[in-house]
Image (cartoon, rainbow, N blue to C red; front, top):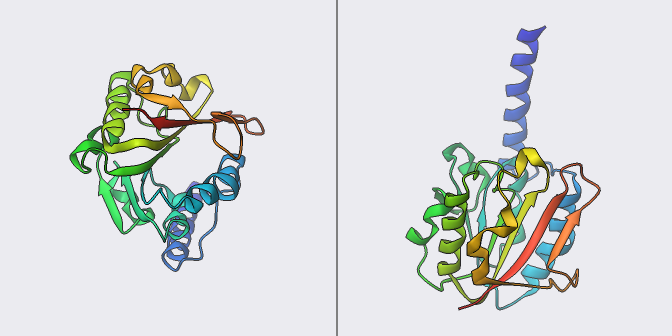
Length: 199
């Protein structure tokens, strides 16, 4: 039985990835992803001043984001080379800690780092440097959206209290009229924090 399971899982994954290549793949049906697809992304896409956008962290359920941001100068960054296929045409394989090695100062309009801290980016010093370098790459008043799971197993340090977030101002995201939105339907209490870069 275990042999059958070990064969079925890779086959299912390969079928899914083939669908993604054809642009007809599935989407993850969770509240945080619905909030992104139905509220956050449409607002960002509609902002004409947000032209150059960086999305940090790729997985199979991010495959369609390049289509969503097709009219933007859209980039993705992911440390795992195997996940490049889920990213944009303009894709960087690296840690977000080194974002400033790939983008000039003040050259990005928006950075979306969703579910990265606590899911691999677990060292507070590395996370803080990452936020500092994101700030360096964002233009004044550029947008940072950082999301994280507010549960002990995925909150390795007080994420929202990183000193580097002091370089940003909380941004009352217009659709929510608040600088934070918590997905209370989910056990993980996925939390979106919205910021603008101060200089």
